[in-house]
Image (cartoon, rainbow, N blue to C red; front, side):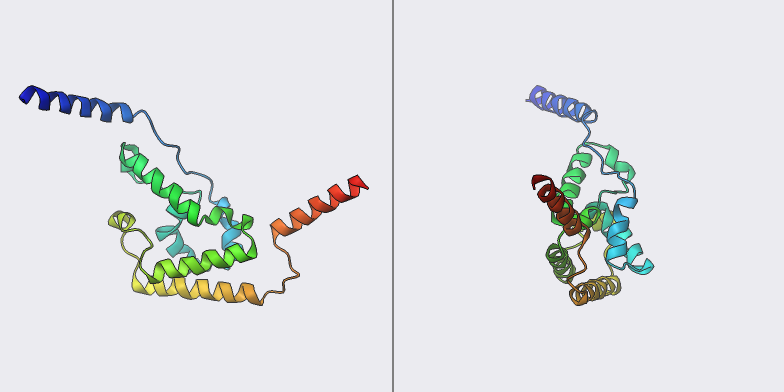
Length: 176
């Protein structure tokens, strides 16, 4: 029986050692991947600070990794959470969203904060809770951003629509 337990611990130890060499890809783009979002969404310095400290690690292509992220299996667990977070809302891809998608993303952003589902509890263990005051600031900012976007004339196209229209006209011109 003791030999069996010893063998289990040896296999577990070897597994942990081997996984140290199998690292997930890091999420380390430059901060410039976020600037389009911050400009288009009129992010103030105060909101920017909250987003940097509580949101961008999982919802952008720029993550600030703590030291323990170098340890497997924690690194794999965190990589999974980051990928999942980016699937739902990735500020680094803000310019790729249509106006309707942007509005929906901000609507979900507000709902997640109101329900206290974001940031995740596992994230707050290290980075701290989102204070009620900061939550209120984020919600107000997101609501104001949605309102401003709805009031913006629809004839001012976003980057994707302009690119699509230019590409479509080039294809049409070359066919004729």
